[in-house]
Image: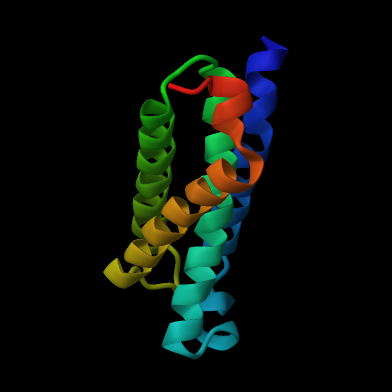
Length: 129
């Protein structure tokens, strides 16, 4: 069981960090003032998540086809981004923004592509399918 959980530790920790940062109302008003910087921060934050989700799925679904692992990692990351934006409605001083979710989604896709390209996970774990 530990071998199936171990690849998910970075993705779980990163998700907890994301929701932890979303719980802090000061970020919305004082740290990130420029809209473009905000969107780049969202993309970078979720780029890490996309990378870690890919690692988790590759580590769990050994032998799965590339497209299936990519689809699951990206879909999960996009869903987490949507939940994060919805969660921000409940945090005083935070606002939810559809454009932030788009930046989150783009970041997830980029993170997935980085995982596939740099680490070649599919070649050594999921096979060349």
